[in-house]
Length: 133
Image (cartoon, rainbow, N blue to C red):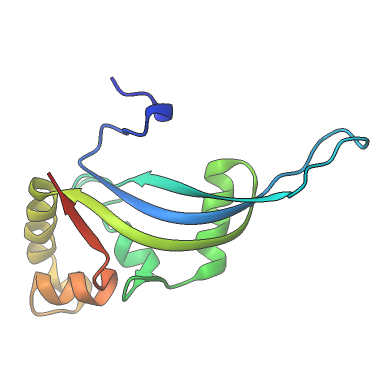
């Protein structure tokens, strides 16, 4: 099984964010310079139809974060440190995951107020889907 440190969550898809983190030393006689660092945060995407699979619907709009403060707080909770900024980069997915996602979207078009899966993908993810082998 892949560990969290080797960059492979074991998922067929992941949301990718650019984050700026504020690092603060516990000891009063220690400091960091710079105290803000930028890194990439990966969040495993739930399998289509499973709990949490509509993360993109609830948090993204046209490939951008739709509620910045809410998403920043979610990242802080997940990372256990102060997030100064967060920016959605892409949904990286295997071709199989992406096809399953579009099929699941098609089965729930009423939840998206859309006519087809392509409209949903464009509405929420914009052009920020990276299908990989």
